[in-house]
Length: 188
Image 1: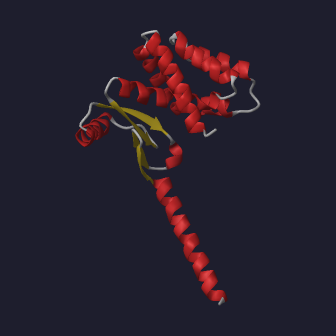
Image 2: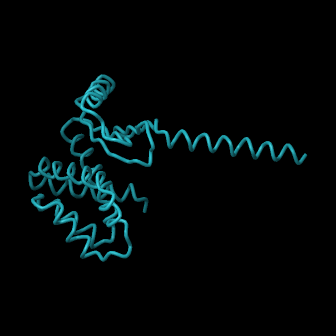
Image 3: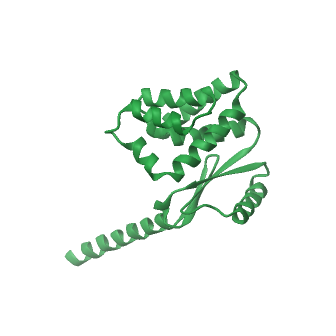
């Protein structure tokens, strides 16, 4: 199964559980904390991705990091560890936030940048997104140094990739195409 689809399924299940327990906002707060903490900690990302570190160690580490979280959030951590899908935790959290915001009639924009957005820039982006969508919008800023610079904006089903890494990949593909064409023409 596609990892993104799996993350969405987990997020929907957790949202349903939170709705039944009337805890959607408390769990959303936890999910914002999960996204921010994992984004900010390369060490935590490495622990979650490591096939060498046992599930119990990962579970105990995550429960210690997210002490005070709602029982539904703690249950999600346990479930993902038990199902050997803990690497999806950040994606599940992001999808939960988006789904819960939609449930409240709001939109959540995920803005991925190489460095944290300043308050001024975040306010400008928020203003533009509100104008663009005509809805109340909140922003989740995810830090990913691998994009080098620029940003990736995801709101709902739409994504705009203005990252330096994406532009470099496009340039690389163009060079490969030109080289292949040049090599083909040269051999004729």
